[in-house]
Image (cartoon, rainbow, N blue to C red; front, side, top):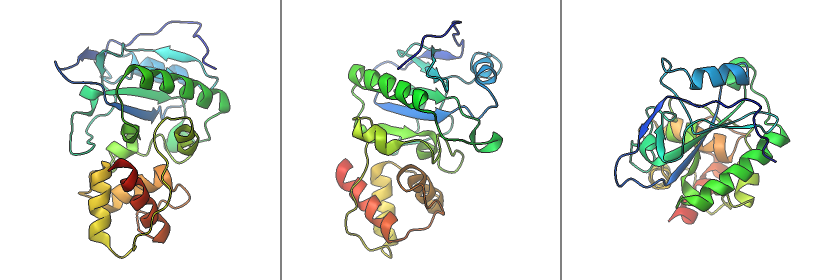
Length: 228
């Protein structure tokens, strides 16, 4: 359940969305900082030039930092399905977690429950396809690892938030076709290994080596079938 914050924070780091651009993506992040307070200070610092629409603390406390109809600055250099204007068309949610640099750890149940409630409400307000509910690492595979392998994407897909593939038959040695399928799903495949690793981090977190194996190939084929 979402908890109301004891103190209100707003970020000055936003701008109007371009005219005619619909919100059709939800991007999930972790803060990658030592504490929620540190993350809030940075997201609300005009000199930092970063922000997100929402931040969820580990106890489920929700901070609404930027209005949904405004363009927050959360994705950076990124792309999905060939489009690089991710901030223009997305809502960004930050989850408080130290991240891989400061002691990455599983997301607590209150935080996941609050995320599930918030994400469901966002999806009810905006025409966001299930295939466009992604992690920061999905849209920036060479730069980012968040929200990371501990985020429970399978649970969220079961709740109607994003997708979780059923394996489909495909040969692991058909690298060209697998690259095409990853691109069709949405990944930037200029660095194929990075794209595979990002896919694994999201859909096969027990194996994040950036190399195709039979199960990864089947999961790629399964997800491609769901997004066709």
